[in-house]
Image 1 (cartoon, rainbow over the protein chains, first blue to last red):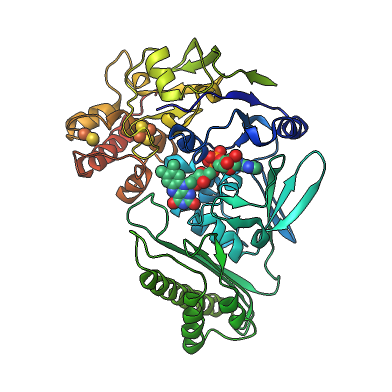
Image 2 (image 1 turned 180 degrees about the horizontal axis):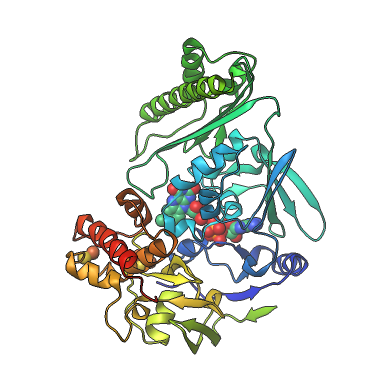
Length: 295
Length: 168
Ligand SMILES: Cc1cc2nc3c(=O)[nH]c(=O)nc-3n(C[C@H](O)[C@H](O)[C@H](O)COP(=O)(O)OP(=O)(O)OC[C@H]3O[C@@H](n4cnc5c(N)ncnc54)[C@H](O)[C@@H]3O)c2cc1C
Ligand code: FES
Ligand code: FES
C-alpha cells in the first residue's frame, strides 16, 4: 500500500516550518512520528498535498524540568517517557508503556498523539489528569491553550492549519505533598487502543489530606476527558474507603461512552469505577508506606 | 531545507548494513518497499502493511521501527540495519543460530522482524529476563510458533553471547 502522491519538505528551523504552514495552509500536514498519519494516508483516509516533516527541527524533542513545570517538546517520542523517569511526574512513565507497542513507541510522539486527538489515546487522559497545557505557535502568534480547551471533537483540536504544537507544559505538583499516579487500561490485546483508559493522580500532605487530584478518561466520549466532578470531591479530604467508593462512582457517570464492539456503555462505566477505585486505593497504600518510612 | 516534489523521484542515500547505497524514489515510497524494491534486499518482509505485525522491522539509527510506516525520504542519510546485516563471514549471528537451534520459527515470515527487534534488545539489555523479552517483542506478531520457542531462542542467544562475546 502507498499513499497518494504528495510533496515532501523537511524544514531546519521553526521559522521555516511556520512559513511553510502559512504558505500551504490546509493542503499541508505536519509529519511527526508518522504513526497515525502514514497509516491513514496509506488507507487513503488522508491525502495531504504536502508533508512538512518536523524531524529535523532542533530542540523540539527536549524535556526541561523547572521548579514550576515540566516542559515536554512536542517531538518527544513515547519511548523516551517509557525509559526516562521524572520523579515528580510518576503518571507519565506509568502511562507510556501502555501506548501501542514498543516499535510504534520508538517513532510516535506526544505532540502527534495530542494533535491527532483520538478519543481513546492514552496521553490525552493522562495529560488532562495532570492539568497540562499546550503551546501552539505560528508566524503570527504564540498561544498557551489548556488541554481541556484543546480537544474539540473526534480527531479535531483547536490547532489552526498554520499552527504547530511545540510544547506540552505540565504544572509541577505542590512542593509540600507527595505525588502519586497510576494508569489503567483495558485492552483486548497488547498494542490496542483502549476499551477504556483511566489516569489517576493525587498529591497527599503529611497527614494524608489530598491537596491536588486529577482523573483522566480515555475512550469515554468523543474527546479525552477529565472527570472533574469526581476529582474535586477528593480535595481537602483523606482517602477513606467510603470516599474512594463515592469518587469512583461519580467518575463512572462522567463522560458519554458509546456501546460498540469493544463493550457496552454499562461495561465501560463499570470499568472506570473499578479502575478509579483501584488507583485511589493504591495511592493510599503507597502514601502509607512512604509515610511510615519517613516517620 | 530539503524539498521533494510529488510524483518526482529524487535521490535517497542510506548506509545499510554498513554499505552506502543510493536510489531514486518518490516521496510516497515507504522504507520497506525502498529496501525491497529499490535496493533489492528482500530479507525485510511486508506482512500486514498496516503498522500492526512488525514483520517489516528494521533498525534505523539502531532503533527498531516498522519500515512500512516510515517514508524512504525520512531515512535519507540515516543508518539502517536489516536481517541481511546479521550474518557475518563466520556464519550465522548467535541470534539466528539460537532461532535455528530452538525452533524459533516455522514459516519464517515474522523472523526477520523478530531478529531485528531482539538484536536491539540484546544490545541494550544483554541479559534480559523472559518477561523483558516478551515485552520487547510485543510489537512483533507470529502466527505459527506461539512465541514460546522465540522467547527461548532469544534468552538462549543472550546466554551464548554473554559467554562468548562476539564482535557484532
Ligand atoms: C498499531 C498502532 C497502535 C497504536 N496504539 C495506540 C494506543 O494504544 N494508544 C495511543 O495513545 N496511541 C496509539 N497509537 C497511536 C500512536 O500513539 C501515534 O504515535 C500517535 O497517535 C501519533 O503520533 P505521531 O508522532 O506518530 O504523529 P503523526 O502520525 O506524525 O501525526 C498525527 C497527526 O498530528 C499532526 N501533528 C503531529 N505533530 C504535530 C505538531 N507538533 N503540531 C501540529 N500537528 C501535529 C499531524 O499533522 C497528523 O495530523 C497506535 C498507533 C499504531 C500504528
Ligand atoms: S508490515 Fe509493517 S507492521 Fe506489518
Ligand atoms: S514463524 Fe510463521 S509467523 Fe512466525
